[in-house]
Image 1 (cartoon, one colour):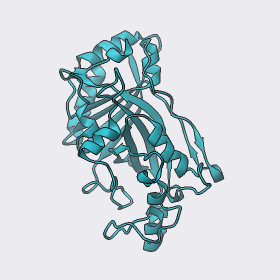
Image 2: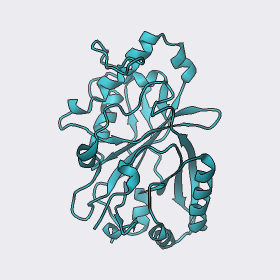
Image 3: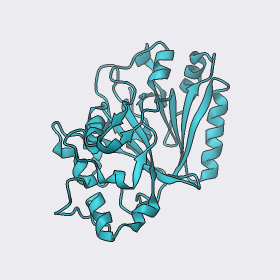
Image 4: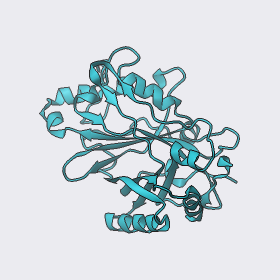
Length: 291
């Protein structure tokens, strides 16, 4: 029986390291496949395959594609930064996450090269570094399963993952008045209640999932990050396809009606990538869909 990877619907971890990997020059992708199949997948590890890896293995996953480049009014841009393999390595503290990551990379030998490392953490009980609660309207329980997990033949238990790294300008955001901050997000920071008079550009107005046709529900597992010089949020959205995510993003950049999400007044995405998170069979990745 195929089951989803636990990290898709499980709680956001306290600490995590996100790794983006590409195939090393001249590497045999079958060595990567063998290593992936040997890994025991639990709460501490989440694995996504990008289109470059799927193609290198001679496979095809219906619905998997490259993240598109989005350019909206006023030069608002969402980049496309594909990678072959994506890992979220979680743990109770940064030291444990570091050593788990090292062991996984050692098992891949010289077959891959690390192209990006992002160390993430939980802020308070799930807030963004802006101080606002993140993921307020996430679907839960059966609704989360319906939003995040594939049901198509051969893909049962898998999920499609969209990843974006956003860089915040917290100095700029903190220069806003409290009213301006609330209207940027569309919620009151004090009690997290949605503003009745939120402007059309407010983030909650741009991304009200039930306002799309069909409804654009995704399961978010985003986490704040910092490298000591920059700060922001890594946005993770799981879906049964990429359609809901792309509808949300199209509206955010103003592609639907010319209104750009007010988030872009203090933060911007610097990456954008799509991955397929395979299901599990007996605690190990099931890559049979690639056959």
